[in-house]
Image (cartoon, rainbow, N blue to C red; front, side):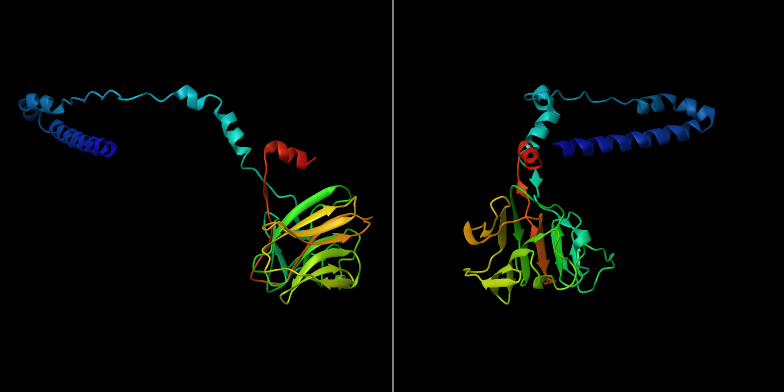
Length: 265
């Protein structure tokens, strides 16, 4: 219906343009010739516009749709807010690691990046730390490991040395996947874990005050391992990815604005 009306308007506009051009040509002709054709010219110049059709059907309830529109949009957005409880610190990333722009994933590159060799940057092991540490309370975050064939997910003390072979020193607790085996990694001691199938996601749960660090599979709600230790130092989320084909990703959670305010307090 609308398409037909547009086409008719286009035809009317084209016809009117032709009429205007014809009249302009006659006006440029000799006065006697113009006067002889005057009546025909006036008749051709007359344009009768069609009366617009009256609207049929119910009118749009404008007030219902536009009243408090901004508030209604904001209210709906509360159900779609994404919050990432942990983000990565690119200033700690090994030169072969590339941290995403939103600081929520890390992948390994073939060549080293041209980055400053600052004291907090890992220089031997391909690791990266979270941007915020914890020295009290309970904290939880999920890591998407996907098809990555070699990774380590856990925590590291803020005071631990970042240079050299960090796995030969204390200060790291995590879950390690290498050579198709899962390992509870607590420097300098490791122990193999019994895990059915290949994990796609790891949940890290830290209770700093009670000295517990737990790992589980959030997709099946299966507990994997818990470390018990009396923590005295601030702990930072810790990721290691030595597989260049796949990124390790911190998984955002869905929460309302009110929940987000509570999480950030």
